[in-house]
Image (cartoon, rainbow over all chains, first blue to last red):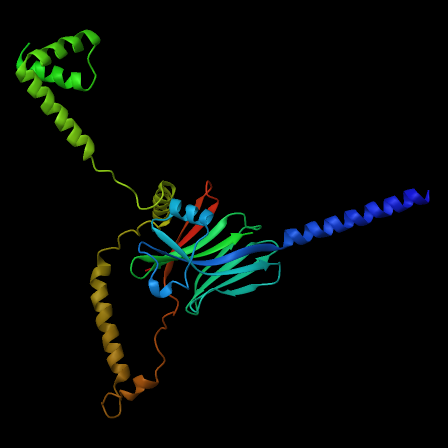
Length: 150
Length: 158
């Protein structure tokens, strides 16, 4: 009888632990925020150290969707967002992203360029797609802010 | 068979559009007739030049993205409010009159009634009529590629 009681207790504790872990996983969204620069030219020699190659899988997607020949990673930040814990990510001197996950309305994404809000939008949670906010840059180049679920 | 018909047959022979019997007949004519051989060679060269130089229009973006932009433009155009009904003719006469009255009202408000001089300093203290918002006008196009698992929000400043 004692053995059965011990087993039952063990199963109960394990189930509770599993449920709690599942809840945590559901509430938390991990992703990489990447600032990418797209150009038809080669990597400028003066920025050789600053610009990295975009990872091949992402580059392949970019080549299928966008028209530029080369894509370079400017910065990358890993982050995790939880409900009620807004995150403010600084990707460069001019580019910042604010992310706020809400329980009912999904994820609010705010893009700030040179201290001005240029985009605010809601996206469903959990974020399954790669979200790319992008726009034209000078000299026929383009910038991309990528939020990639991980 | 006249020359024109023969030309058409040679063209059809070149395009593999003839029956086997006809093709044999035209083939024999070409090989035995110098004029036929010249015509065949000329048509063949023309065909090759056309095939090699046919312009291929390549979209600078993916097909899905291109069509989604058109779809969104159409949807945006459909959302525009219908044009208002034309105003009655008498409002056209009233508009310049109202403008003149407004101008006089403004002049009278600026003139110092006691001295009859304009008090321009008043305008320095007056509150501005309106304030422009500092935020830039940004339009967005959203595109989702299910195949790539990517959602793109393209921002354009106007």
